[in-house]
Structure formats: structure tokens, C-alpha cells
Length: 182
Image (cartoon, rainbow, N blue to C red):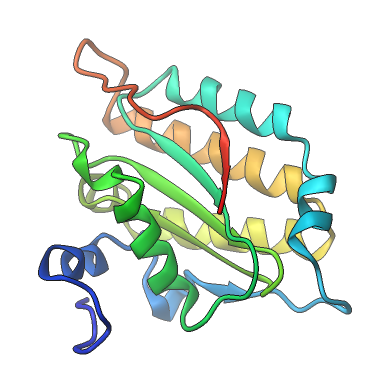
């Protein structure tokens, strides 16, 4: 899959389209129907940050890969998947020598989320992992189980990455274990 021409991505970022954890056809970026507008502040107030951070630490303790969670504030203009790919690059996740980092990107106000994995982990795990994650997260989000959506996804991502890229002396560990808001 390649980025569309004119999407504003530099050539290096166009390659990120190949790194998408789930194909657009498999609903990597989805809109979760909800009865009311969810403000980011409300989402964050319901999110148990400590549990999410602990899930990141637990998952990363088994692998050389990094797992990041990014909560997008405000409106999302354009496609969620493109926004997640750009954030993946801005966070420097593409710089891991193993190319096995994963970003979970959530835009509460837009009721959208995406999971983006780097090239090596996508090649090892294939679309089935990402599709399963998207479905599980969608179910949790619909039921306003925000923490469970993230913790369960992080755990499953950690297991998948660890199966192919176990913790070793080459682990980068360069990213802070936190929920990023922006």
C-alpha cells in the first residue's frame, strides 16, 4: 500500500503507508458510533493512566520493541490512519533499528482510533493480529471501557512483538512509558 499523491507526506513518510499495522480495507482506522460527543477531557478523566502505563512497561519488558499510546486532542481533519502515520513518524518510532515499534492512536472527540506498526512487526504478524486488535478495541470503546481497550491491546501487542523480537541487549528503550496527549 502506498500513500496517495498529494497527501503532504515527504518521501520518507510515504513509506509509512507500508508500515500500517492494519490495511485500510481491514478498518485500521475506525469510527466508533456513540450517542454523544466525547470530549478528550472526559475520555482522559475516565482513563486509568497508571494501568495503561503499567501495561506498557510490562509489555516492553519482554521485547526490544516500543509501544506508544497517543491521545489526539481536538478535531481530526482528514483520515485517522494518515494522522496516526504522521504521529508515528513525529514520535520517532520509525528510528528503531529493529523496525518493530507500534503506536496506538486515539482521537476521542472524533471517535476514531488506529494502530500503526513498523515494517518488521507487520511482516511477522500480518493483518490478522491488527484486525483482531481493532475489533477488540472497538468493542471496548463502544462500551466506554477505555482503559480495558488500551490495556488489552498493549498486552496483545507486547506478546506478539516479544514472540518475534524478544528483549535483548540491543533493546533501545528510548521512549518514555507514558500516555502522550497532543
